[in-house]
Figure: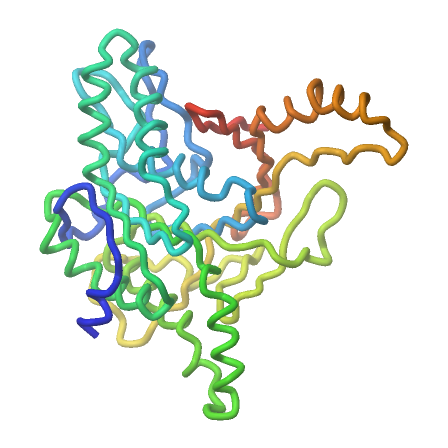
Length: 347
């Protein structure tokens, strides 16, 4: 077990961590405090987020899933308040499991510096200092299999206790849960004749169990990205949803689960695993760009590319739909991605 854990490549911007359990007075990651007149802190996507919430972000390739994670990571690690200036952050630690090898720390650094510079336009040196301090609260691990991911999650409380006792874990991210889908599916098919019990050869179940224990012991906001492979038959018109392709992965439902939010997240862990239930589901897909008409000439195609299609791509807008367990309404938003910023427009 220890040798497997040591094989996991990890990237930490500082040696810190500890096992501070969640306290009821900790501000929820999604809560946005009133900002002062000079503050330009961005508003969060969801104002109803609570510690211990579990969010699935699903969408096709290049639909902005990782950039939406950047938005939440920034809200987590950015400073809360300093020198009477509200920066809109939480000043908590964020742990990212980058299974897709797509989480770009220099990109996150650029986005954070841009945000803090908007709040401190006349004090860039302070913005740079706060950026470096905030990034020390970021911890990135890169497991290369679901078993490594499960092992790392099970040992995260120890890593927290030994390395960063001064920071509470506010956000736990896995990007993406589907990274090992095809290899694990192949192994499961090969082992089907050996073991009649599918759960015994499904490492995803170990990951979900570890996440459930961390949710009870530390109550971080948990965000899990997932591929959008097959459209759901219930998708109609502009609203597009995807089927769940991961066996045993929690599925969104309009009806709340009695086990979704335990009354206490700071007591002793239960002897049996608690089901990991989704509290929010976010579906992302890029703004569609109409194809060229079959009869269009080369000159007109070039002109259309310059005037319309290129502007749509450079605009960097991603449409998203938010569904919350226990609610029937669907919230729509636009994720705007530029070279120097990422922000949310509520619709």
